[in-house]
Length: 508
Image 1 (cartoon, one colour):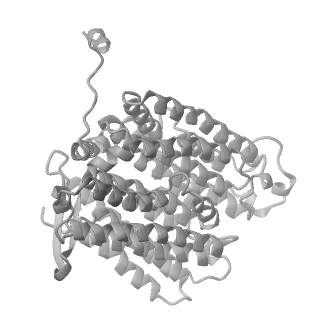
Image 2 (image 1 turned 120 degrees about the vertical axis):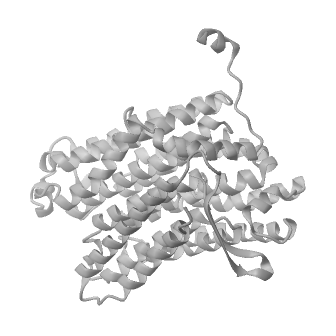
Image 3 (image 1 turned 45 degrees about the vertical axis):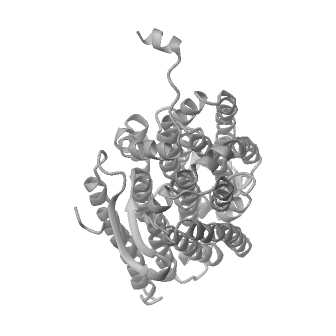
């Protein structure tokens, strides 16, 4: 099919953002309806793209290329492999739900409602662009521009310390972007004056140059992901952002970091990727344990969820740098499943916070007796976040641990201990928030007298369905991911370990 899916999907939300932003401030309901309808139309087009994608076909499909800056060899080049495709679908699925969940968020404090929903659509446009780009310079442009709408979503529409959190988020990402800019310039100089992804993969770099270029990209991606010790901006940003924006921030935007490692660091710098793999695995394992321990002590629900995400990104890092197909597929699947589960968790937490006007765990207690259905959804989201068998995150976490155990037992064993810690911080949060004696302040709170509305049920139902479906039948997604992961492992020169002799005999 020759339809330009990727360019249309990148431009369409931006057009929608302009339309919504130009609507009168006195017509907030119209702005919401237009934004929701636009995001649903983008979802429908994304589904058509998913159907048109051939899992057994070329590695990169829907390729488009248009001239941009000929003197620099820069082009508007878009292409999607299986890794990019699943991330594009994740964006398309989450955005309508986030818009619906954020229906009343911008109205608090008499803020500009059309601009809020325009920023969400603009963010969707930049995220589509960053995952679809097949030109390194184009990727860098989207990587940086993506910061702008999120900065304003946090700084203008967030909660307490929103300006501090927005500036910290922007500065951390900007510093990482500067490292990548230096590496991008180095690529152009050493790679034959081109930014085309395939041409750079085929280029030959000296060992020293390749390692320095790898570090430039990896620094930017490690900050964006974030990996330990570059993680400190995320709890602040996640805690201050509106719940819907936080769901996008942690569910999708942060995946640009791990996606960038898979798309750029490994294929472009294979020797350097193998050389720095022990360092990356060490940072990932530290992040799993360190973030889990910090999550246990959090009294702010949104900051707690942010710390859990840092631990989850550690698992993704382990899967990437184990350099096996199983672990790599698990890492990409983890990126999708984490987006669904943590997106659901953030949205449900946002529903609690909206009712109580507080995100502090100590301000709840016994909320399940007043809001049984909402408390049940919070329990489900929490159990999915800790990778309970039968939920989608379990499949991806199992693949990561299984694939990494075959090549590095120590890393796999330490990472597995993070599962125990995850059960601790999630169940401790559930117990303190929804169980026990009802907090007297809740009983007199008008917002706590209303369980889930129809709108809120519509928000959570698709995410719950996807988490359960992919927990029992992940094949439609893994069939798309597997060929792209195998090709990436071939780029980095990695091969799966041969089965042990004992295992072969047992199989016979």
